[in-house]
Image (cartoon, rainbow, N blue to C red):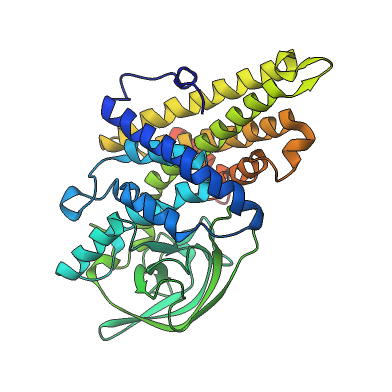
Length: 403
């Protein structure tokens, strides 16, 4: 792993406790995640349950869960520190911790039963999946068409969903549905319904198939079809403080943390690519000297390291603002945009440094490159982030249809 000096420790942010958490995740990634990723990613295989259990034992699924429910009760800063290190090994592993930390509020049930599930989630034994997008709906979640109608104490769900990662492995799926077929275009008339199911299966009445992807291996991403799927109606399905039918707005608000998490994953991918490129450049000899002696290679590495550090420091600032309750959409959009765009550049440059070797599955750089490309798309595309930032700075466009 890289020398800590390369990461420019910031004593204002990195307390001894945070350094300890980060180093724990770094050591775990080096010892456990990287070997598994290097073996299974070329096979497009799922991460083993044993690895998930080890992460649960370390508390990685409960970083944001309050201590009274068995979690660590920490903040976005610690969450993103761990995610960055895990992404250095395999982005899917850095992503799966969100199926605990970001899902405990949507756990179905009430009273002691629900509290027991939260405690299990903090240990990685009860995890969720989110089913938001649809074949014709991506960033505009207010326009979802999958319907949920109320029948007594149950919701009945009918419709199609797309891009539901971990639909098979999760213990429940939080499904964003429309309850008012008219809606208002602003997220009203929507509800998030938590559908419990056996681990390793889809819900009863739900069929689907894995989507063929070019990366993000380690788990499957599904297209789902709900046909009269029933789930108990619960108060937790409504947006906090917004009342019934405002789930799309609640989801949009929750994306702020998700975008910081994506920034952390982007930085981890870029850091991994940088470290591998440096190691290769020192070992690869051409024209009688290691290619790390060539100015072209040295300047690439210098630029990569600078951009990674800039993204990391912005992430530290944004996470600190999130934990202090001060972060707005503009800050989280900026860090997601900057880190994702940086990650694609850095991983591509690393692949270039490895040359032909980088274009094989014998080195992890091509994995970082494939996965970095996704960070510009999920949790809101780079273009969506630019729109959010521009609207915050300039106000909404004044001409109808200019969006």
